[in-house]
Length: 275
Ligand SMILES: Cc1ncc(C[n+]2csc(CCOP(=O)(O)OP(=O)(O)O)c2C)c(N)n1
Ligand SMILES: [Mg+2]
Image 1 (cartoon, rainbow, N blue to C red):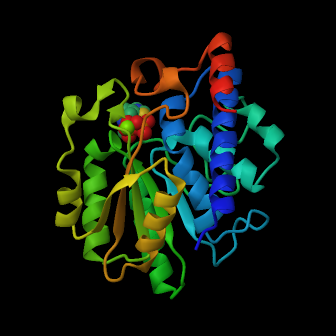
Image 2 (cartoon, protein in one colour):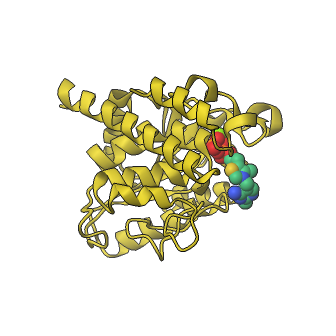
């Protein structure tokens, strides 16, 4: 049972993470705000409620694993890791600077806490399958989580990976689809539709938890709790989200804010909305 105080605490944490996303991207003048903001509540629940992890010991053998398959949303993962204590928050200022470990897409070699380097869409999920299989072989009682995008779901590799996870009955794996309905240049359903998405995952032998409000902390917690209890099948949580969530003029506006930094004036407006 999660208390209302804990829910409030998580809601506030997500707001802080959204503020970091805006500040980081505007400071360096490039990056992906839309898909970072849509995943902020999901990552907040994962790192501050669900995941078994130790920021002071990122390689802890018993840890759960998180893979951000939609690696262009790096700012949300950096902000979350900093808030969790993996590295000082002041380091967020170095996003996309030469020599920084915080590059435009996440790098597992240079940044402790990153389990898989991603950015080439479609690949992170396959790596997560490998982790889930390895943990099972080692008889480890931990869980692997992977966030994928809906545009990313047009990649063939996503479906190869889905077939693998279903075939091997990877019940230590949970996929979370950030279903924000937009990709880089428009609506997913107009560009190359993925519906009926829940049926597709069922056909790939997944336990499907759909209709989850991906911005409601309580609903995300419940979905993740249910996923961890599922036996004999991997789970997908279809999280209904809004691209750019939390900043009114970024919401559902991929042509301006999929991969572009806000101006100084826009930053002021955005931060006012995130108090
Ligand atoms: C293999 C590959 N092709 C193209 C790109 C360029 N790209 C970056 S993000 C993106 C759109 C992704 O859409 P979606 O998965 O819906 O992400 P979100 O809406 O969560 O930002 C594209 C095409 C890439 N990173 N990798
Ligand atoms: Mg999308």
